[in-house]
Image (cartoon, rainbow, N blue to C red; front, top):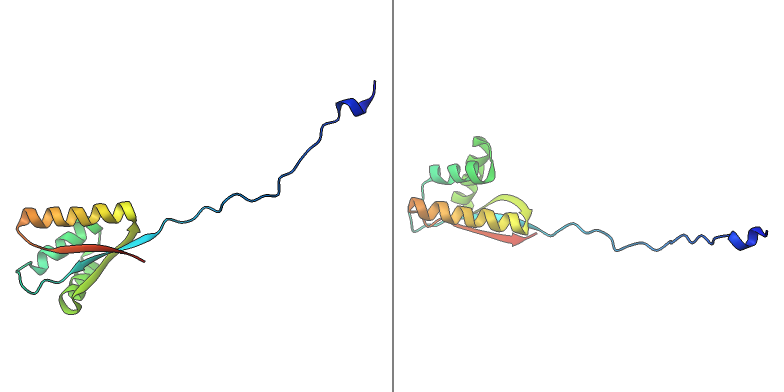
Length: 106
């Protein structure tokens, strides 16, 4: 019997598959509203509850919103950012505040 008959051919693929890409990230922003009475305390509560910020960090972001007109709450994937924006709007509406929140791609 010949060994040639049972030889198998091995083929090693050197092709690389498509690289796994990180999903695009989005900043979630709170906006100052000069025309209503959204309280600073409410903004701090939102930052702590929705964005899991420590009280000191929440106060700092709130001051950015108050003084600069906008504050970055965090950076998330699209779905998470969208959920956080919706949560802020729902909580603000339930509390009678027109707090504005948005998201933008980094």
